[in-house]
Length: 306
Image: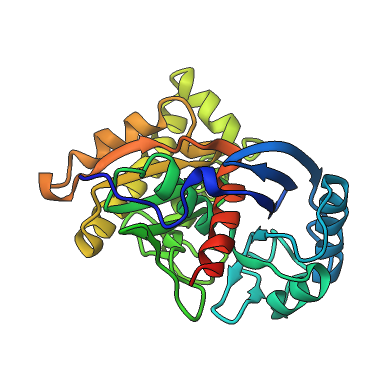
């Protein structure tokens, strides 16, 4: 790997950013590549798009955002090339349909860019975090679902339909059921939190969510260890597939499951089943909750210079 110059140096990041996720909405004022003020509120998952934008606006107003100031917005869901916002898992943001997010943001804030929250985190990790010295980098977030983003030579891969980087929708030989996308037997359906909880129910532990399954595995309960190991094996196989397609040299894991104690080691161990050519470096994501905020603002500033 060789050092590569990011299109937007971190110390050039100055402006505002917001991250609307399935459970929380955060907004930040960023100066010189550092978050100097952050506000966070719970997300109303049933709210209509206009109400979600209004909630972001309330946070930004408290941070001193003025109309037309640099602003990057990251949101859960699929954001297409025209700035349309679409639900991926309707159970996460049930009020989101096909909505002109870009137009609404321009009307509300004067100027702004928008992208998927996992893609924003991937962009930041690729430029400033775990992938800063990588030429071909993937960020995979394993949480309630499985998402991510791909940064190749410092460019975030994107597509007109907004699907680029939704790596959890890739098929998995370890899966049997559908995920929220509607596809059958996907990585998300077996590796994400919903899939882990479903596997626990099938094993007779209906009261166990993903966190409880991990706790049971840590106590040496075989049924839970099998579920967690299957999740890690599915992520390892996904990494092998992505490496075969893109020639990845580094993969960073994020999300509550991806960063859970022992999970990275499980994925690394599972990846030993692959030939050496398909085993990139696997590391933890390093920017934490700041990643989608940095990535969203970096996307805005990249857009302004092109």
